[in-house]
Image (cartoon, rainbow, N blue to C red):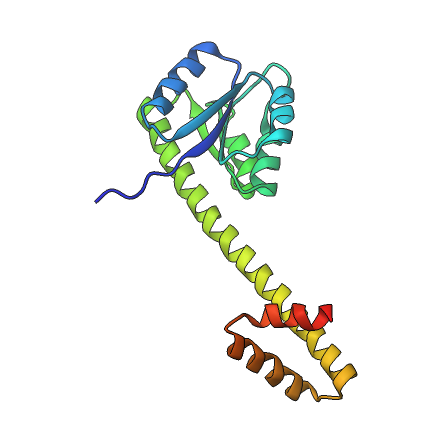
Length: 192
């Protein structure tokens, strides 16, 4: 049974037309990418101010920069997977530099099969990041709810002379009786 296919936004940053053509043919065969192409770091940064990407592939070096800082910044500050392709003679040094930031690195030249496998890794990484984003949002929502309920309890304590335990039970009972969340009841109490 095949899993539901996801679509990934992909930014390719590369100034080598032959490489770009080969890469676009490889991603076109995967049928799950919305691709954009930039030929320099400056242009890529401008595009990244307007849009977030799931996967960024940087074919270093570029005419205006080596691309290493862009790879590190995007991998560590955003929820995207980054692949940096570098000349094989520089691979060990650059890998050592970018590895702590979660940047995948491949030496050039690389076989078509290896690049295809790298896309599998990038997709897996993006899915893991997606799950972490959901957990993070869920945790933030829960913390917001706790803060609101605590504020509502303080309102009940100060305005109605309840104890903290009575205020808590009052909010829970109202939520159960009305079949709504404690957050909804807390917002109602705070808004009075």
